[in-house]
View 1: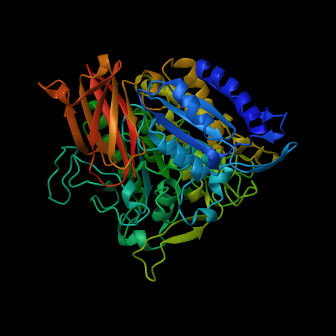
View 2: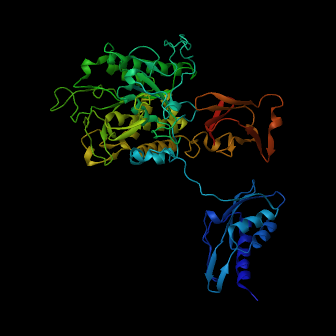
View 3: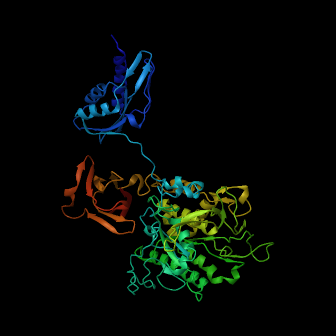
Length: 598
């Protein structure tokens, strides 16, 4: 007699036999209409199995049938012998009566007891980690408005595809370099020994280990002036507060290095404009040194943020300051500045009802001027012009880092102004640099004018346009980081055949793979057989080499395990949790992958 259970198993047997031969099954959930049982699948009832090398398909099929539950299988990888098993584990009421199926724990025990599997595990739901766990994120409306969560799925800053550390200089009153949400992203000049009174890297600046105080010509970038209102600390937090560290807030860039350059004097005798000029020159020299030294000295500065300015001012009175924007552009640095906080039309002398504003009116093509919006995309008090102000960004009610050295201690604060709009744009530009294909990065070196034109096009054309800003800035809208990123992505797909947004460090032609990743410290490096020679190094986010292996040395292949056409190198990595970068170099070709230690 054909019982209900036998009917179900018969149907499953025939379907599964075909499946194992085809090695795929993507049409679930499957409904068995004759008995009224619907196989509704979820993570709780899904297992991931790695079967033994000696296990046959017939053994697998027999084991699955013995579970006495409706099931479906999907082959994940044949070479690793991994498949997923989906089962139904609840009580069901069908046309032939009530059926009570074994629960998932019983199924788990049966699979384990079969002896056919190296590993049996449940399939677990996975959360996207690019929504940071910073507890005050709910006080920041900007990431949602700018679609940063989508961009963070592809990059959070840090390094570009060549593995170069990305640096953004912030010319301000300095910032709290010991702030728990900023200290990890502080720029380090590794060629300089701090406070030994010697210019170790011969760049003309003594002890500039973390940046430069342009107004006082010394290496102290956190001064008494930095504590007056905490302006620089707040600007730095908007741009680059450490993301996903379980602390405070998240900046646009979670890992990009911030170079503090101080222009604001601590005493009445100091000259702020002189501080600005000397800070800009320092940024220029460091980027030029980076290029001329083949990236061994200086800093890879891609942008300078200046949340500062002079009201009622015109270019003819500021020729040196204004000319330096072209100088920065000549070495590949984009400048971003905040427009005046006064709600006035910005323009040249002679314009009807126009007011002066420096640096907005400086006229350099390498300078973006930013006015301010709120969480409803309304223009808030700030300078406007459809000729001189480039775009808006949400600077109203910015919740950001605040100096912890102030009493009473209050490490975060809410403020408004264009000062907190421009670092959002600086962040967008540096995120583009972190994701962009190598063809674009090469263009920034060989023809920066062309590369800048692309930056400009992606930024201006990527805004969320609105009637509110139609005549208030050149773009006619407010910054949208995702749209800007998508334009870059499309350009790179078209112009770089090796580009992929799935694996930003090397793509499908990468010379090695890492698994598992993330890991607790014990992981494997998988090489194709012809790529195994060369050197492997692991660097931390500070640029320090913490692991090195040279496979060219005699006997170095003893530690490699051959699997098919691949070679596996097991690594025991006893270092603290965080982000690292694994570099494989062979014949001058470098491939880099991100490694997460949990």
